Length: 198
Image (cartoon, rainbow, N blue to C red; front, side, top):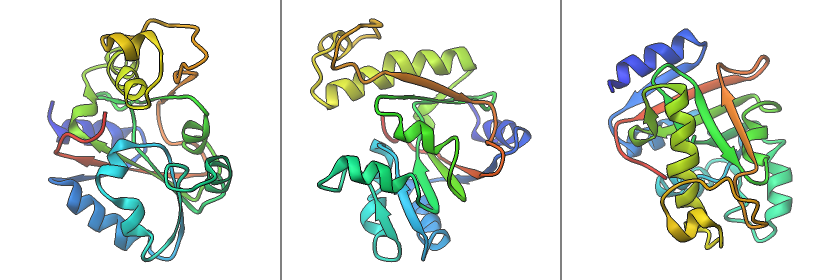
């Protein structure tokens, strides 16, 4: 899949899109762009791998439940941040962004409440169609995340696919597909030509 094609399809849907050869260059861009703002973070291995919490924390107030002692308080406070950073579980070449969430804070912030949301996405998240993107989110990203979190779910134990389980440890509680940016909130996609995240 060509990132230029994905970029055009996202732009046709109303997103601002920037291409970066490396995650380090995307991090440089974000550091300059969001300086002085309050920045909330959604759970994201991509953001963590880029060291964005520590890096942006030098010039911004940063809020992330992965980094704060009181995760519930951090999730609530991040909902009121000027800027929200997250990634996706999958991105369709046709421009749909797909996320699965457990607590709901991450998907909620992509839908409402911030001046702007940034989606930081590595090339490994790409899928040819929206159906393939949903499949990737359910059968690749979610089992890997469940295993990373030490959950005792069939997908984490077997590591092969979603079992649509009813386990109390299930992290897949809601699925959101964005067909375009929500009204009243800017959205920018940073596409990175590297494999990042789950």
